Image (cartoon, rainbow, N blue to C red; front, side, top):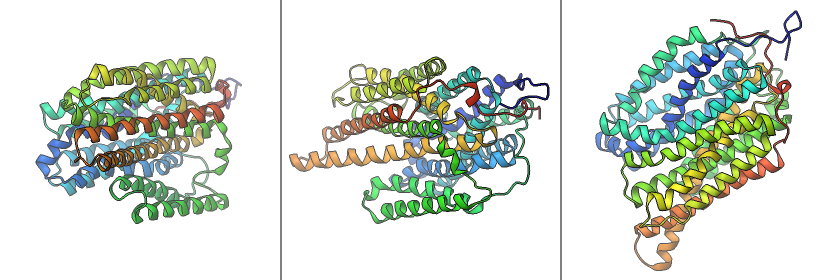
Length: 491
């Protein structure tokens, strides 16, 4: 860490905890909006005449732009100044949320959701990079990332509860309208609590070719995995999208290796902690949504619980994810990232396996409770451990890039996880129907969901392998934290 002229380490911004709270509210909104729509789908269908395909695009329009653009905007924040980029994204998020709530047709809602995903892609990596660079002290930084990880786990599951409540009491429009007053309040406080987040010094050259290839590749990957359950993994659209994404990634490596001012300096991938953290985060994304999606279907379509009832039931996992995140950050400082990641992934595997035996005539306590109780802390611990590792040893000037990378990996993992478990569930259900000769039933549907939970456990095992063989055991030291040249200045 660079020192002040008198030889002392730079003083931390006295408003850093207030800034964390402010940014955490914005991050919570972004994560919440990825899942809050699930419980409002039936009401949207009734009001807007959405088809099944239309419903899927309400969900995935947000995911596509969110996953595909985070790396791009994370780097833009490094170049142009984080606070100004974050505030621009927040303003766009408020405007697009209004547009979602006032949508007069299915097409208008899908378009507004796509813009909302763009805004989220600006906000999420920029906010995380501000947090990472605001805490030069190692122990404080890990604590801050523990809080951040807790918010991520809480937001990912709280959307199920909040969406059910708002839809039942006020109407589906309010799952979007609620963002407006909260967003405007955060926007008003940004100049007070956030430092300027100065833009990169020197000549600001932007790698256009690198930006185009690395933005298009994740978009194509996300599009392919979202389309796969509809047309099959061997469909021309899916295979073509994967092939195009692979070609773009190869072109990206070539462009970056020759660029004088690369968007993503390839040397950052020599950072083992960064690579290990991103692999763990990929597994977390695969497992979390790979488990939540079939769980939602099981609770509502097999057991017949309402959206609000299911949201209340999921609270056990929400609470335990926060517990896991706080415990994870505390023990990472003492024991290092590898032991915590191993423990967290084992809990994810165990929680998913506890859901495999779910029965058609089951119950919340008998079939869901224990799996959620175990899965929750594993999710929280892995989420924060992956973030700490992925931001370890990254310079302050590149923290936006690193934050964009880890957020992109998580969202790509989420999209892939949902697509794979959906394909497996459909395949198993069809096999059961063909073997018995009986028509489709709740029982055959449940067979597919049980298989999906098994796949989620396999995703957790991928994270376990990353923890065992890629992550470093040592505790991240202060020397590894993002370097800051001066404390954040008031804006």
